[in-house]
Image (cartoon, rainbow, N blue to C red; front, side, top):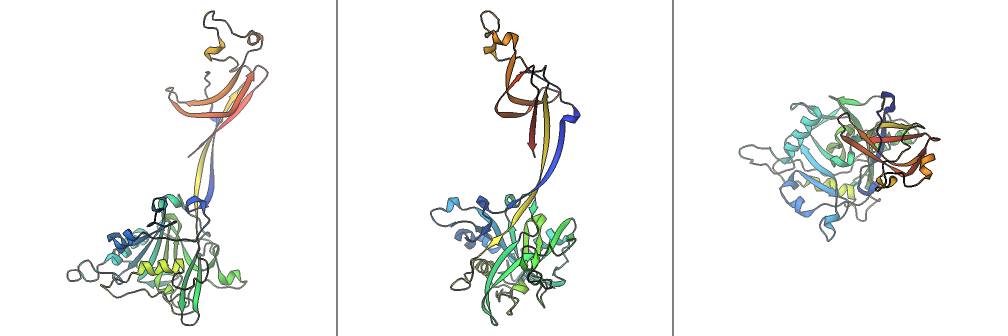
Length: 358
């Protein structure tokens, strides 16, 4: 083993953005959605519904992996049973959820959510599992199909995306980016994709929600989804206070297409993550006069102390297999293994690039 001090120009730092699907097993689009009955019927089911990639109740429940959560929030607490309607009327899991997201996103407990410039008092939130979206969600990758049934159209499918490709600068809540959720696909409105113009909003209820990539969340405008017009789904959100509206399940059914029999189109929810991978490149140089003598005990005879093979006397050489990186206290910090032994003698120089990803 030989040592060599590295110089400042032997280190290079690089940053590279990477994108990947948010879903388990690198599935680009979720088409099957499952909930777990124990969670839905338990206390936590009043606040949110966890959505899995496979059956979370059957024999393969141990293989089910959570993908995202559905939560319903209402500023007045409507659509959920109150904790204690006599002592605190209207204070319910729905109002708690509304307050949590208001604090997280708006950072003001007196503020209201505005979707495309229209203030609304209730919403649905889709929160992607933290490990799945890594650093942030990737703008332009949101494609969500919701299904319902409206008076003018009957069974219908609503295709939603974010408007990241239609704006130069996103809206900011503090340091948090926000885009509007609109009717369309791949970051553009349906009108623009068709060659026209239009922002993909509803006529009366504003946009379909907010896309918040930095916290891995999509907030859907409940009022827009409740529209019984060609722009909505007639979702039927229950708004009455101290009433178990089971609203989380209503949105889940819209995602799965179960509101229609048969299902109108194949369900689909695609979403990508993004992260910046910081890499340290360390260039290890072995000059022609360096590292030509092996320190392997088999190189020298244990009984005579002489080189075992006379060939190495006139032509000393070694085989490099490993690079160790040490600090000034001789602590081993990292180890790099070569894919194959690298022959080294006085007629050769070697350059080994070690990559450390963070």
